Length: 491
Ligand code: TXE
Image (cartoon, rainbow, N blue to C red; front, side, top):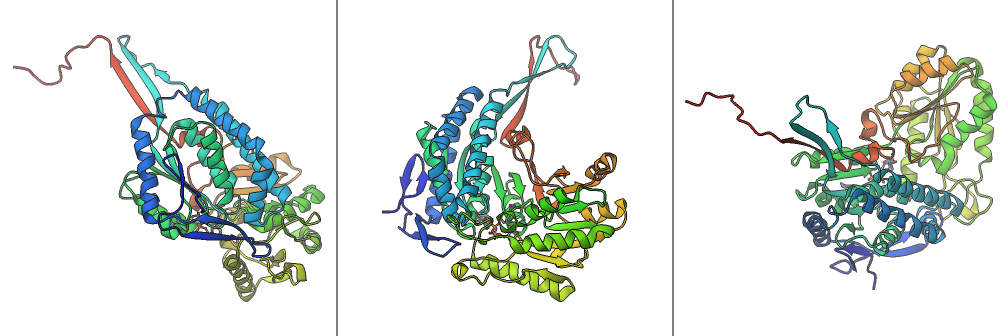
């Protein structure tokens, strides 16, 4: 029996018994079987979350108590870290060691929010009247749907679950149907830590089937979603009727600007990592290289050399440096994107096809690809491929670099390399993206906010703001010397 839905404190099979096979992107073998929720299961999960929230079973806990729960979950995740990392690498095809880094980041996320929750205090407002006590208090937002993607499955869910727990929300987690196993492990830790029944619920299945109610049901107060722009837009439309709160992270097309005065050795090495880490399946991937004309040949030649040397391989290949794409359909999309780029006039310098190595035959391996002679107007520059594909554009002046870096509908992240501190600071400030790295690319910390400008999304995860997304703010005005308002005549 496969019982991997968690509803109202109980592990259940799907109400129609349907089971879904999860396949390895490395060689397509079945890595797990999980229950696939029906509409009835989804409605049960929403009902359980709503009932637990309305009962006050969790909101009656103090912020400190809920923070302690979150810290305990961090301990349990640490205890089981390698088991969870194994599941994550099975589902995603990423190397086991990368999955271990991800789980370490998950634990750090829980510790961050566990620490932050204890610091939530009400605030007094001076209203200028000695007989009035005016307080701002922070309360749980309500019931949240937490929908995650497949590239960093547990980490992206953790960014939502940890603050939701600290805030006292009840919720339904829905990981990507391609990568469900680590979310199951997380819910087990949440259960073991002693979370009240009905607070945390888990629904598995394709978003197109189970997603509609998770967003449109009036009992849901908030949707926090990480995934593609089109799905994000669908979610916004579905949330309109109830004016639900939304937190959306919808990817990016992130500029990586290299000036001629940069430390080129470091810049080039980081440019390779930024574009090809996890085969480009990273929302903040630096896939849009914008390079000063005078150093173009040197930089691009070296990037092409380095890209051609990247070793691809599966979860247990110790020599591998990057893994497969998540699915066949994603590989087809990436491939189509490159073909269209070439048709639009881009020059393919390396990659541009599946790996033809025998050991990659059954997997979704796509070679690191560099497209030169790109211009902002091209589709390959504007749209996220979410694969190992770097586009290269040129600039002559600082103003031009900024204009190109901002010529995108997205605004998640960007990087700038220069040894001129003032110039780098000017560019960092002019770029309209949520995270900017100067002489670096990629690092983040749970204590710093993460999120996008423009079509990269709404709201922020992590940092302090990441907790605020799950809170309501209430102003309580208490008059200790009641008197008549005296506004209207009383005759
Ligand atoms: O994402 P989807 P896909 C981008 C990336 C990628 C593209 C499409 O460019 O190529 O999105 O990827 C659930 N109601 N990113 O199609 O569909 C789905 O089940 C509710 C960027 O895989 O957005 C999964 O759990 N939920 C990104 C989640 O949404 C729905 C990470 C994400 O899937 C739904 C991943 C619906 N109608 C892809 N339809 C990032 N921001 O990091 C789907 N889902």
